[in-house]
Amino acid sequence: MRSTAARTRSSYAPDTRAAAAPRACDSPGCTAPGAFRAPKSRDALDQYWWFCLEHVREYNRTWDYYKGMTPAQIEAELRRDTTWRRPSWPLGHLGALDDLLADPLGLLARRRPRPAPPSEEAPPELKRPLAILGLAWPTTRENVKRRYKTLVLAHHPDRHGGSPEEEEKLKDINAAYAAVMRALRAVPG
Image 1 (spheres, rainbow, N blue to C red):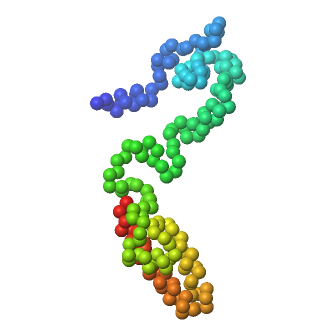
Image 2: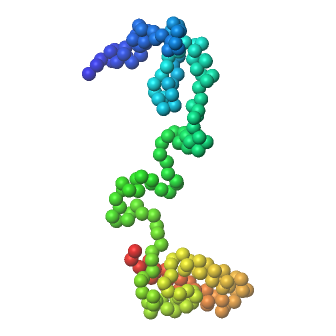
Image 3: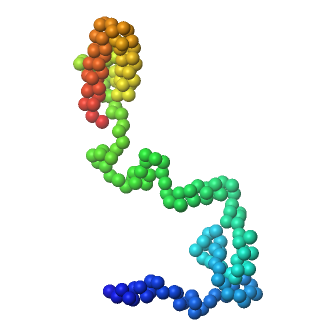
């Protein structure tokens, strides 16, 4: 392990290699030192020309990163730069991670509506609740919720001056809703 003095000396000391051999300007016929770097091309941004101040200014005046690109290529380049050239995905998606994550128990899966049982005839205990809600079998949880909200608004006693008949209808609607939702939760899938 290196000593603290050796680490400090090498970490903060000026680069003596650069001072020992100054670069010459890469412009043809120029003998001035090349103290300013400029990228060689759009495809080689990590490779540089070294110019003197006069020639780097001239190079910068003529440099056009997008030269030779179509408008569609320029747009794609700007979009990649928006995310610092890192991959991104729409919100709510894992992108490439979706394929990498194995989830045999379904713990990471987003909630999906459970399908109704394959038989077309409603179970006997659901025939009356479905009739009260005005739904046909098979149905989904979303359909049941939508119908329930509509019926509650239509039959709420407050909308009918405290009517006891509407109150009884609302109790039946609540019981039917609970029975159908309980049955749909029990459906595997």
